[in-house]
Length: 103
Image 1: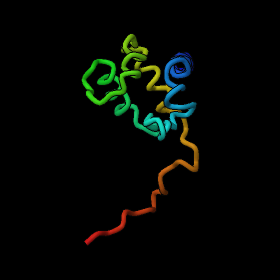
Image 2: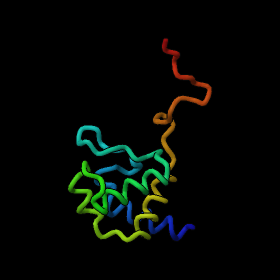
Image 3: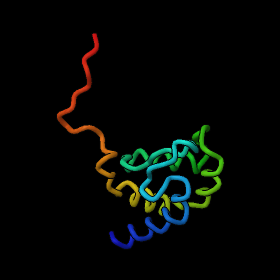
Image 4: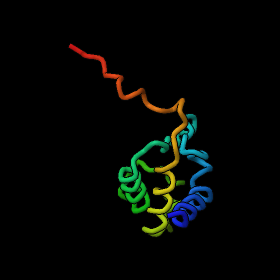
C-alpha cells in the first residue's frame, strides 16, 4: 500500500497540485474545485469522465493534463488524494448537527 500511495502522491504532486493545491483545497478565484474530503468512488468516476471526454463541462487544461493517465495511474492518484486528511477548520459540522426544519 505504501508504494501505491507513494506513486499516487508523486502523480498528484506532478499533475494536480498546481490547480487543486497541496491538500486538494482548490482555488475558488480560478474555479478549481476543492477535492479534499471527496469519496474515492465519486472522484474516480469524475476523473474517468473528464479523461475520456464524457464530462462536457470539464476544464480543457485538466483534460489535457490527464489525457495520458492509465487506469492504474488514475486509481493511484485518486487513492492518494481521497486519503489526505481534511484540516479541522474545513470539516463539515459535527455528527450531532441537524439540518434546520423547513415548513
